Length: 223
Length: 112
Image 1 (tube, rainbow over the protein chains, first blue to last red):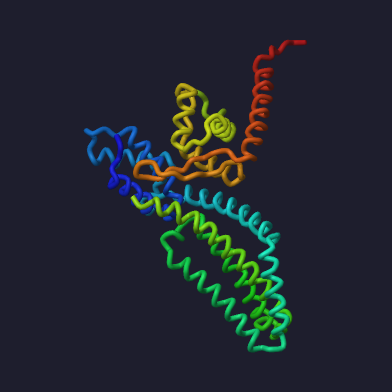
Image 2 (cartoon, rainbow over the protein chains, first blue to last red; image 1 turned 90 degrees about the vertical axis):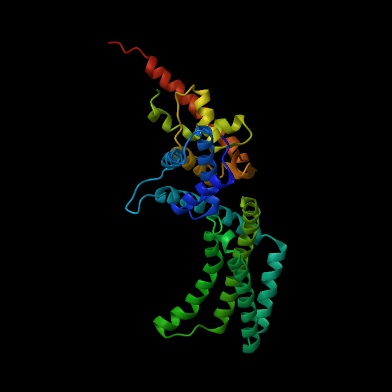
């Protein structure tokens, strides 16, 4: 018996309440539970029996009772671990491909030339730095606005690839100052800025590519 | 009812073989297909199937395609190029294993 939109939505909400917060992970679990219930459910079955069928299917998928009632903690942890493995592999591949792209090479060289030319002009260097940071914040803000799509197991870990290089930059600026009372020179800062900007650009570009794919799927999710 | 433990180590090979025969399949379809082919002897649990599918996907042997079916989305799995090569290798290994097991099981131990 085919389930109605409301019944499917009910199962989806239950999966979410049981700890499957990422919509892209729920897709497969939802389809499985719906397939199982559709096979078993008969018109004469009561709502209680419908709910019992859902719970039985949840248990088959790895739902376990715990102090808070129950959940898919172990299942989710394993899924995320495997997701991350795939993401890391794909990101490494993307980096390799990007390093060989002519527009990326030209961009990095252009940035290096600009930074070199502005080395003696602190104001120009600061302006360049603020333009880079501003563009970065604008990009991240755009993703933050689409937080519903971003609540995906495939996208959340990618934010690390975009914020990571910036954290490294902060460490390079502040760690010598805090621990050794030593200020990093402008040449070291400029060099770090080029590296950090390049990796941030790769991270944002990769996140953008994956975001487009996820968004396309998310649009079909609206029941 | 077959001994499920004996099949446990072969789960990934079973999935790869099924996907080699059918172009693309979804999770529930795989469980039903195995049930049908083995006449109910082998029952793949969902708790074992999905981690195996995700592991194969993470290893780059499977690719995923999402399609709308009725009021929901469905995740289909299909073999990648590497997956096709790996399936052939694993099936060969499986044949070797079965041959060795058969030799062991059918061997008559004497007092020679």
